[in-house]
Amino acid sequence: MAQQVFKIVDATDVKLISINDGVSVIKSMTIANVHSSEAVVDLYLKNATGTIYYIFKNLVLPTGQTLKMDSDEISFDNRIYNLYIKLAGSTPVDVIIN
Image (cartoon, rainbow, N blue to C red; front, side):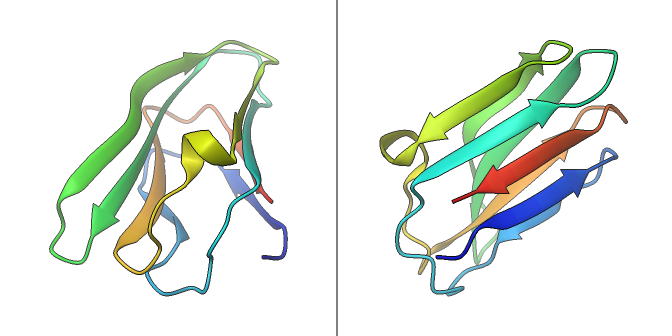
């Protein structure tokens, strides 16, 4: 999988990886708070019928901090699930998926 980079800037659901995107293995994923206030982040899987499974919900990411997840913490079946991120407000974060 090629590296994917996203700048998430508002409180809308953003699909990071779609079902059947050909993503078989995620080596790592980082979410960096690039703002001067804390960010509140949801990261979740959603299947084709719309059922949501949270990886985390309402995670508070302090100013200037980065959360790094390795493959064993972010692996999922891309044939069944989309990967989404959502912010609780407008504190921007950068997402890098390897």
